[in-house]
Length: 243
Ligand code: NAP
Image 1: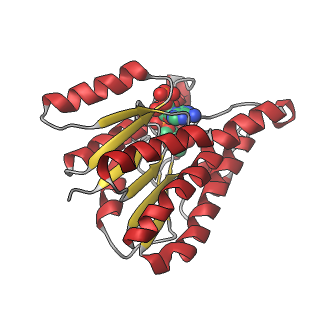
Image 2: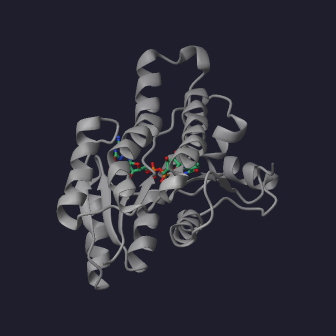
């Protein structure tokens, strides 16, 4: 039977491209969205025109009940989940001393708790099948920290910690867990950056340009097929951060 994948936050940007990449591989994709129903429907329609069927499912993955219903939908329809891509995320740009508890809860719940919760919901099925692949979309800022994005950086560093620890716990069950840490990727998340801001950033990137959602999606496409990589944080950033 075809493999089954859940991609969170797949209505726009990187998640949308990941959903397409996996669908083109013949994987059954459940593309999760939260607010952007029109974009999600457009994605489904676009793929339908190419003869590919995907499911779209609304859930706010910062909430356990909604994440649970997303997983239950997948299990009811396909009976298994082979791949989980924790991509849903939001950014927050503020002086640290202006950050509130509400900001902390919103960013941590959307970016980090969602990954913790979605992993908990899918892992029992993966363990039963002795097979699984989890990819967490973290960020370069989780690796090196970003001024004015402290909570965001914490959430992504936490995601990388989740990746490393879970990879050790789940390796014996043949479940691989990895992070992809993008640099700057051309999506709505960066629409606050001016053309000059982008040009300045590009001067510091060895490959001389910011990335595209496809750059991340291609790496996910590779990760779901290979069999011997786990617990790794793969930086896709044009050489902006080289450890
Ligand atoms: P984006 O264009 O703003 O898209 C964000 C996606 O996440 C949307 O599909 C949105 O869905 C979804 N989402 C947000 N909150 C959600 C929630 N509570 N439940 C379900 N879905 C939710 O952002 P992007 O650039 O593609 O970012 C995708 C991931 O890559 C994020 O985790 C981000 O932190 C990470 N990343 C991005 C960059 C970058 O430069 N773009 C760099 C490093 C890491 P709706 O619109 O339907 O609400």
